[in-house]
Length: 527
Image (cartoon, rainbow, N blue to C red; front, side, top):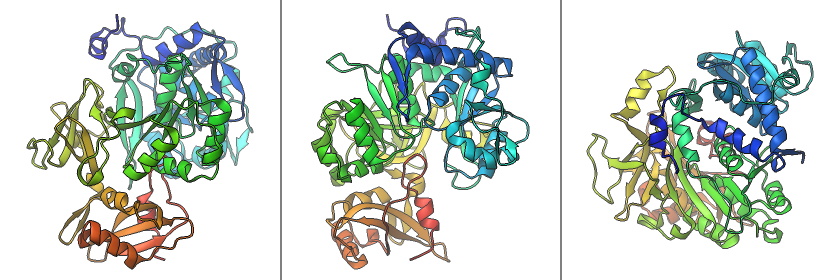
């Protein structure tokens, strides 16, 4: 009998089995299967990985990791990073990822704010530790594997994996409860320290009630993790490893390398943000790549162009799955391959129907529930909604009310219960005459033959009035002009939506998680 998430949360600490414990049990039970393929092509079996992780968990406990402590990771897409996550969880500690792309002072402030007990650094981030370590005060710094003894003038720390070699290859006797902290995941942060989202073991455990299984051919899932494990790729890796599959790691997202890995490794599952999907579609190697192994291309994280999604379906087949979620709520809605014909106002693609156990309401700014089809703020209630923001009860009170989370997203539900996103509330551009939601203009511009990729964003003038700007990557052989695009947008959407400034760029800059970096575009000097 399958235990529901609600029943799982209601269990006592003694009965509760955490997600990391389940993952390691699955790996240990099938020791000869291939679990991890590193970015350098090294294959690690499930038994090897599980044994190393259990040993590391015991070593971390000996060094102070326990329930209520924080283990912070400065890691890349490595097997050691995955092992460290599981080991810290098995020890009872919460984990915090320090994201690539943030400045060392901000990372140091984050590490201090979450009360870091141990900082773990892998080989991919030894260089980054040079700036960070001198700014830290308090945590024990340990290396995940051999490396140079020093980075700059500061020691990295002892190789904790080597130190764990004599520890037992068995689960530590640590009792983890559903209300224990699993993670603090940082989000936002255009100024100052990003908000820390508290995730609990009980909420995360619910995702494993339905295994992330293989296809009808019985082949276990084979995930390519080319985006940071610190974000959704890590969650998918957890589900795949628990379900008997394997994970192929890449250091970063390069479209040519991704396509080569899909063919070489017979990848079945791929996760991309929409801008990364477009890069795959535009890569010259796409037409000569064998994509026959691919069973699922999951995408989400920001608005997707309907026309480009249709193009992707033609290329990959009916395997696209749209996921809508947030750090504060985990998964909210999903659009399955056969549902990609769900089109809303203005040709907008649905993000899917709310998942079982997830309630969604559309409300006005004064909290009034809005009827079907009317646009407003998306509110969510489920067992996976965050426990709150770390040490910020004021911010928690702003978004959590009676169990309902105000997502900060704008959207509506249709008569069949499908959810459509208009935009992020904070990305709304307030112009003379009304509001402009960037994704609406982006979706339109991507249908223009001279536009390959684009990002629309608001810029304030000296009098704090907002103006619509657009950065465009031209289609091959094209050079769009501002007046041309203004006329196109005006004809289809109205003058209010027309961009006032056009920047031609070779690529749309992306944040470390792969979303268009509109803050960078906004802050860049005018051409």
